[in-house]
Length: 432
Image (cartoon, rainbow, N blue to C red; front, side, top):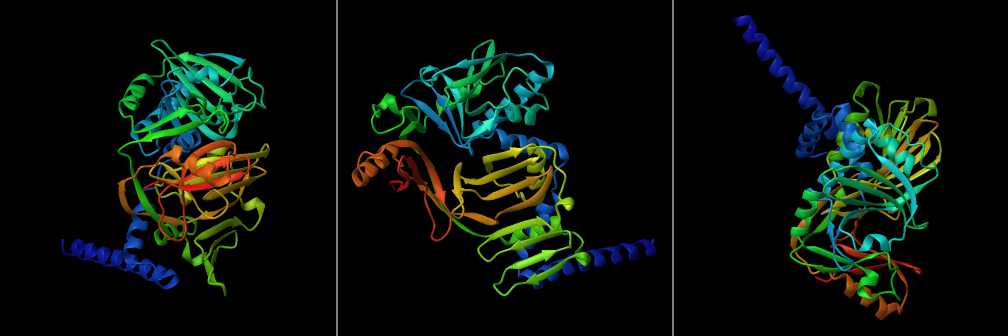
C-alpha cells in the first residue's frame, strides 16, 4: 500500500514537472502568457477524429458566402452564418445529396434558365461569389460522379425549391444563365424556411424589384431593412495561443526541432523536412523543404482536413475561392467571419491559402489572429443609404454587388458596405 502511494506521488510530481517544462520552454521561446498556454493545451487535447474532420471539411465546402430565403421579388431574408438555421440548411443539404446519390435516387436535367425564373418563388439561395466546378463539388461531397453533366460546367449559386413531395436543386451559372437541375425526394428544408421567415431581421429585395434597373445589376439583392440586428465592433490582434497550438501540432518532437529568430524579428521553426515562419505582422508561412515530403492529398476535402487538424481552432470560416489548374494541382483560399460577416486580413482578400501540387501539400500561408468583440450594440445598417452615398460622390456608376464586410487591422471596426462597381470596389461606412 505504501509503495503504491509513493508511486502515485512520483507520478503527480513528474506530471507537474512536465507541464512546467513545457510552459517554460514556450515562455522562453515566445514569451506567451500562462492563460494562452492553458487555452492552447485545451484545444490541442480536443483533437477530432478523421470522420469529424471530413464532416467539417464538407460543411466548409458547402457554406456559401451569402444565404437567403427568397419569399417574393420584393422580399428576401438573409441568414448569417452565426444563425442556427444557416448551419442546419448546410447540414440538411449535405445529408440529402449524399444519401440520394449513393442510392441513385434522383432525376437530372440541364436547362437554360433566366435568374428572373427564381425571383417570384419561395426558395433558399446559396450564393458563393466564385465559380465552382459542378463535378468536383459533387464528388467531394459524395465520392460519386455524374456522367450526365459536362465536366466543365461551373455554378456560382444554388437555388433550393421544396414542396410537400420533392426537393429541386438548381446549380445555377449566373454568367451563362444555365442550370443543372436535380430532383430528389424531400430533404426537409420547409420547417427551416418557416423558422427563417418568422425572424424578419435582415430584409433584402431584388434590385429590379426596387426600380434600380439603371444603377444596379438586376440580379443582385439590395438590403432594404435591418431591424434589431446586433453587430459587434471588433478588433484583431496577433494570436499567441493559435501560434502555440500550431507549433505543438506541427512539431511535437522538440528534440528534432530548431528555432531561429531573424534580424527582423520573424521566428523560423524547422525539423529539416518542414518549416514554419511566423512573421511580425501576424502572418505565417508553412512549407515543406522538398515536394516529396509534402502530405499526400487526393482531394480538396483532404487538403481542408489537413488544415483543420493543424491550424483550426474553432473559427467560423468558409472557402472564398478554389483555383484548379489540373488534376492534383489546386489552391484553396479561406476567409474568417465574425458575426456571420467576412473579416478581410491584409490586401489579399483572404485569411489563408492552401497550395497543392502533384497531389501533395506544398504550402499553407495566411494570418494567425484573434477577433475581439469590443462592444455590441444595435446598429442601423442601411444599404440603400450606402448606394445614395456612392451616387452623391461618384455619380451614377453601375453597381454589380453589395455586401457587408469587416476590414481588420488598425483601429476597431464596424462592418463596411463593400460595393463592387464597374469602376472598382468602394467601401462605405455603415450608418450607426
